[in-house]
Image 1: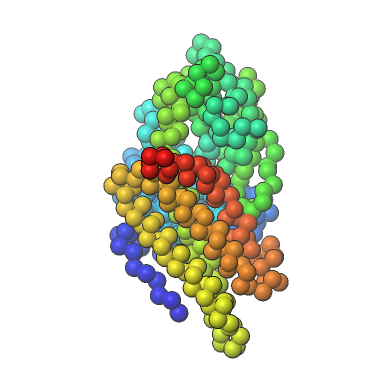
Image 2: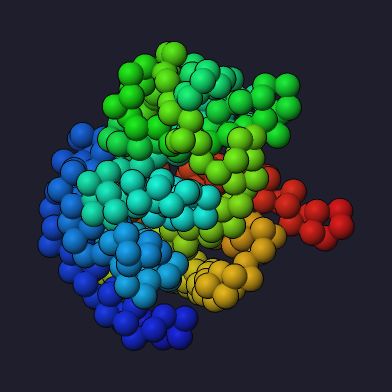
Length: 382
């Protein structure tokens, strides 16, 4: 049986945290996961359990209820353990890896005091309202408008494909406050979903990621207090791009862990075949190729993690990690799927089959593979 490679990037405390996360996921999450698939979102009990373990407090200062001494490596641990069990809980990463940093880096003391303790405790769930019908995440085409009217912004528009959209208590909402300025006219508002004029739309049925909350939302003359402006008006584009390196690293880690899990499950299945004298050379070579690519991806991820915690991860390096790991995930999962007996993977309960469906979007969201190539090409002076 293959041995687990030692990874010096993680401290002893983080490895102990890994054990606690694994126990939590195995005992409290995995049994309920089929219900999440049916409901299209995690249970509220999950958020409360994740908060109790400190998962929702990763990166949040202790004064707001955060996990003491935590850094981004703790998030990586959680992602890896989730994928090792064949689950997809992307909404968790949306909260901890994507949304919380906006409040940490751009929120006022009053905004941080109002929301960070609730996010750390699981009392509140947060979403990022960016993608729009017909525009995707093309910020220049954003149609949601907000105009200042006294001490409020009045918001009209709609968003779609919003992770955590059905359950969110808070939305970090991207709006056009100066429609004539293109991407330089975008602002971010903190919107309590109980605000009059806020409406949730359909729960979206997806190809893969069945347990992930993905929804539509709309805004009709929604009055948002001016003090809910995040940072400075019309600086939203700069804020949105400032966290892209971590967002793309988060996706890369998820893809890397998914590919690693696929190789592990397939190796176990092939060992059973070998014990029956039913393992061919071609299957062995196919999995060996996949294991080699996974090992290369792991080295790249750990290198990127080290750079990120040292505040040295560039947009180019994050693009390299996302491009390699998401494309590698696609190749590896596809190869592994082909090694299984068809009847065992084309079932809704099959981790291997679900890995195939869940992984496809990794090459699209957070910037498509083509966009990653543009970024890398620009760095090469091309």
